[in-house]
Length: 510
Image: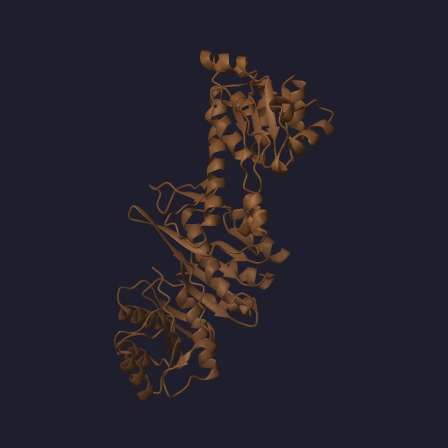
């Protein structure tokens, strides 16, 4: 038997009617019988197209407030019968079941209803029963039936109708079946996650409907794909396609800059997911200049991000630097024109969109899931560990440094002064090494560490770090505390006129 099939009938039952009209008209032009229900039936009739109500097939009305419309053997028999099976063909004839060759269904908007903050009753009513059953039945019987399960596939299906005049190949039907099972599995995942919000059932389910193949992964010999709605977060104004590593850096930049949302103009430069420059000033121009001064060597090829609009003067300075990506809430028209002067430079306008509240990463033969670190150290939550209290300026610099520290690879030490990142010791196996690295780096760029502050992502197990910092000129320290030897570090600071505050919150970042 040829795998080409000419459709003679279609069942249409959709929630959203957008894009349906041209399909219904084409089906009618091809002489394909249309069966439908409720609002969809009215919509098609209003187009002047003849349609057979499903109730005429089942001899049963829509009941229970529309909860049961299509759940009937005469509907599902018409979809699930195997046209090359003599027994199925015989039963279809015996019970006067109409053959259904096309099923067009979209599901109640469950996710949108949840996201809208609707009541539980409204959400429950958006759990589709008949629609999901029609999709599964039609997709299962792809040998004979083509299933169109989403408004996103209407255009492709319309093209298929125009190209083949109602005929479909086995490959066509199987492709649409895969799309259908993608829709149904995503829908069930969303429902499960709604019911399992307290994770009482120890199961991990995640589903993302969109994906984009990247040129490669972290290295050229690795494949890479991004799954997600990038366009929900950014408007891309210019530049080449983002790479796997670009995306990781953009993620790190956005999460870091969220710490300074609504603050004075702040500019950050990141490399390999860590800030190599960051400053907060009265103007974004000066913030950029001082951020770049933090490490002009590492800034080459970096990711740049601002918490306010980038203006012409700032863009002219940025344009002197080779950088991969520039992110801002907006660009002035002059700034945009200047920055577009480099063909491959990626310009992103960040939208006001919430980021996920949990983090996921593969681990061994499974995944690790954790809540996002949403605690930002604030002055009102600090404990003053030493008798000598920090000045207001030192306190402000410590909060500034702790925000950077939170988003830097552990073990980390951050040195800052006057709302400017002097240096970080990042990703070290020893906190002493992280401190020494940061001091050496700050000195290499001629920063005066006298009166600078130090932030640590975790406690000091020994007093050696505060001793090294004190000898370098550090005047104040912010750290979580919690070591059994905290007192030794505190005593050293007290004896050497170094202020120490404790946050009580560790910020490991592995």
